[in-house]
Amino acid sequence: MASKFETLTDLAETPMGKLLTEVEFPKPLRRGDVLEVEIVKIDPEGFLVDSGHKSDALVPLRETRSMTTDEVAEIKVGDKLDVFVVRPDSGDQLPLLSFDRARAEHGWITLKKESELGNVVSGVIKSFNKGGAVVEVEGVQGFVPVSQLLTPFQMDTTESSSVNNDESRIGQSINMKIMTLDRNQKTLILSERQSIQEKQKLDLDKLLEEMKEGDIRDGKVTGISNFGAFVDCGGVTGLIHISEMSWDQVDSPGAILKAGQDVKVYVLKVDLETKKVAFSLRRLEAEPWSTVGDKYAVDQIVNGVVTKLADYGAFVRIDRSIYGLLHISEITEETIQHPKEILSENQELELKIISLEPEKRRLGLSLKQINQENSENMVEPNEDVQDNEVSDEIVSSTELEVDADSNVDEVISSDLTEDSNNEESVDEETGEETEENEDSI
Image (cartoon, rainbow, N blue to C red; front, side):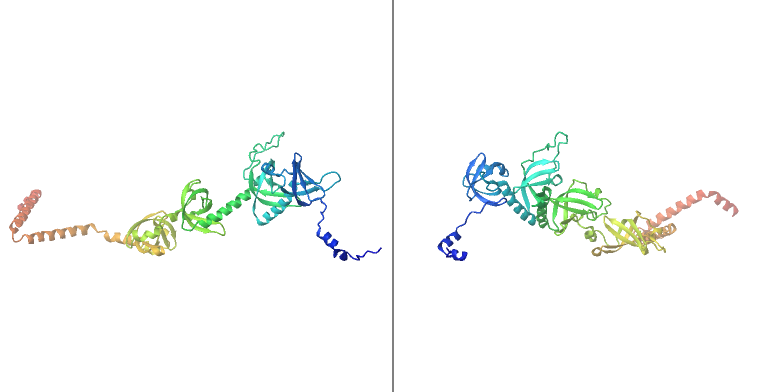
């Protein structure tokens, strides 16, 4: 008998065909499938679940090890779980499902996304071995090498044991960064240190944005080098270059600062791109040149120390970082080829300021003018005597003129008395010569 339906299309157009099309028949379970099931019974062996197929399935307790104690305690009949098909229908045995593997499958997908985004993930330390820590993250077992743990652990090195002798961190939740992820090889390598560095980086970015040039911050010296000192200011580490330690010359940073010393620093520069910060100590004080005009003036005599000799002159420090130039033409009136013919380094000099330009940090000095002035002030002894005699004559004449009207007789009498006394004293001293002269007469 020939069928009245020549094609399946003809069958589908009938009411019965449409009904069959609308009905979804359960697909057979296949190993590796991940599906959602509903718990219908809880017993010591595990969870009996409705898989939506012709028979119920079992999730053994051994396949729920990734659940925490609190999660297990909260599970009740009617809850839904994502499970992984370990064993499909096989005769009289119930299909075997795994919550752990399903979570791991979801975990691999989640971890892949987090790795691509560079995010930090959270996991629990399960155990330690000689190489590091075994952790569980999103239901996936991973490994943190000992070099990537924030707190190194000590292993019992005796031959009879390889157990960590400090297991205080087992069960501890930690944040980690994914270093290596390979789903096919089931390899997951993580780093606790990188997660901390990531946090510090985020914190540093925030701190750098808050730090402004010109700020004055409290800090602590963390290290000394031959070119400067490193200072930590609340999580931001910057450098005080040796040139920014003092307005005076600094031979060694260690002579100014010590490791561990608390200091105040001036924020000199903040580079958000390179994450570098420059600090200064000397900017906490006024620049010496800013007050030069108040302390010094042209023609002022100052003391200084020769710090360097050059072909064209000598550099002289007169105060802290205030240096002036003693040009070769201002050293001496004599012709010299080099300042070293007259001067030497560290020599102390008395000098005259002949030019001053604070805004250009220029100060001109002269030794020659000091020597010239000293020479002019020097007077010969004979000239002093002659000057005194002339002065005495002027004083006597003046006294005579002043007293001419009233006391002139007294002044003359006094002068005569002094002359008489002088003559008597001369006669006594030269008596023998007087007698000889009278005999000759």
